Length: 357
Ligand code: ADP
Ligand code: MG
Image (cartoon, rainbow, N blue to C red; front, side, top):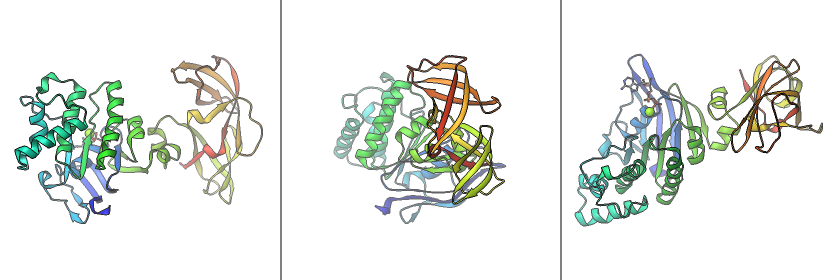
């Protein structure tokens, strides 16, 4: 269904000298769950606010389907925004809060009551309609804000860090529920967060933003396992970066010189180029490797620190031919590894991501 596609073309937003959003092109398909992910101050709220019509772009165009909505006021757009602070009316009951948008749209009383009930049902608050807002927990308030948003059946739901104020357990529960809700409604969601785990767990696609620009875009697996650049590699989880230079390259295989010796990786760059080879902590393995194709022997490592983290043991090791490199490994929680141990380590060629400096 192409007709409700949300499209941004060359969107910029300046505040005096500050560039909050710079030349963003972005397409969100009907029924997609898009996450805008980035550090604080990267421009996520500004971008979302332009989609919702609360901030006007300095330049560029926003479309829903074929319609140019760049200058359309929020109330006329087929979008609804859920804010982090919920923005509920504290003196009104739950059902009056949820029905507020419907009243504004002059929906008949009968229809309104039905839609309020349906919406409360969808967020699991069917028995809470007559409560007051101050009688609800943080998680329940967020559900009311969500019910109010879906009651008007927007084409696009915009959510600005909606789970930021909730404690970890409720947040995880709400993440799952939000995804189920989105899939069952088949409404387009654009969800802002600074938390990469939240983004990976929820998104169909992630747009990773830094300094107002999209640094990387794609499904979570691709963005995590094949980061497009060093910013992405560092922001999405932990990374081990190995600095190396390309000695020779033929048919997409390069021989690289590194502090771990010389080895081969898949790479298109030319000889002389400086690169960073990225392996995630879980991709560096301890133990003797059989010298077979696709396995890169990284020599011996000395364990400097072991931190038990429940699901794994994080090990910081010293390694490289001069023992002057540091890597982080994730090992089994049952592993008997201890400080001072010497371990052979290796990694797989197929896991290596080679990024230009
Ligand atoms: P995020 O939501 O990713 O934390 P924002 O979109 O809120 O980032 O902000 C992006 C940049 O724009 C920041 O440098 C911020 O200080 C600036 N900014 C946002 N809103 C305004 C404003 N109304 N006036 C001036 N600067 C702003
Ligand atoms: Mg923000």
